[in-house]
Image (cartoon, rainbow, N blue to C red; front, side, top):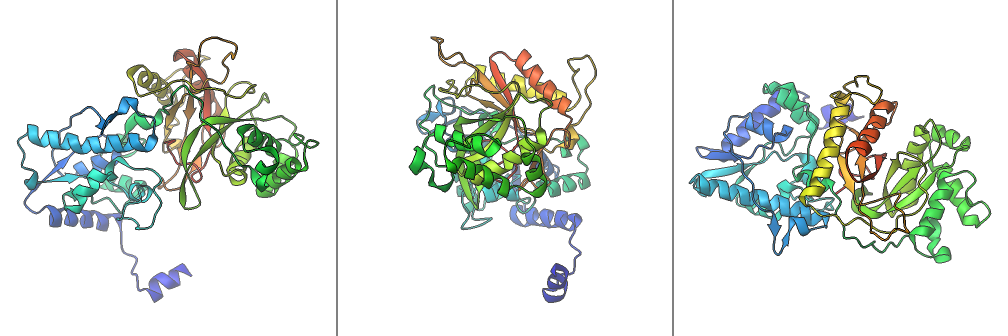
Length: 465
């Protein structure tokens, strides 16, 4: 059908290749730039490096990040953090041009903007009707103002990540650059979920208007999620709980349903008092995450991933599901750890990220003394995220919460528009993830738990913010 439509009806000839697109990019740059010059700020990532390989010079700088009266180290809102950082890039560009005595009229700004960036930012270049999932640093209002003036050159704006990598190879970039894992433009700022020490008000609705029966609280929703992920939970408390379990089974595919019907272990579901960015339907969601934990060993990964798919479908106030390494979580989380983008917090995530990366790429020795294998090529990206959560805090203690938790987000994708959460034993060795858990808790001060993000995209985006 597609072949008939494309080649016989529309008249496509099928000869468009990456080489053609390379020439198209070069032609676009020449037509826009003419005899003027281009300023490229190279982050070291794939996209900006491919742009720079077209033959321009670069220089970079930094500046204090601030938007209005709010500085980045005082900001907890994820969208505002992204906007502050994106607009700072433009201000840095202005500072560089002033330092180098460059005339703004003689220069264009190069950006390695990709198609997914524009789609998620709801840019008019991609769609006039899309919902903003998250503002990318290369599509803030200052960037759009420059773009409206015709001062931004973005030859990769119709490319996806896999296409940029192929183009990078053709342009002669080394494998170490072309295949490196993407790192977000806003950096670790969006991998640190900030919070005051006040627990947010949690209001939930579960399936079938159960809020009218039980009340719209996190405790209510936890009851229903527990019913969904356990064969015997809640059978006698209320018929809606039993109905939720049956709906969970009906939502599963045949193989997952057979697995769930044979389940004998207990799985604990804990609603996390934080929100994460996701995509549900065609719209942005900013909803809660759930942590699953169990004392069952070996860890029942297939069963856990089956429930990770089902829970966001049944509970629309949840868009992300994780597994918490260690024993079953015993109590709900009552408060948050005060967290902002200050040096000690950033250092904590840097240390965890470095440990996880060294283990993923085989640059570390396992706890049993053996050399770990390099398995970095099995996933396309592995964000490491810091949460303001202490799972096992003694609630009778006089001090407030001070520990954090770490989330591992190994992700398998080709285009970064959709993707699969890496499954232990399928995409990555279980040992690799267990070693990450052990090393991070042992070597990073003040870490409560390590979690594995089991959410596909959609409903969860690659990044948490």
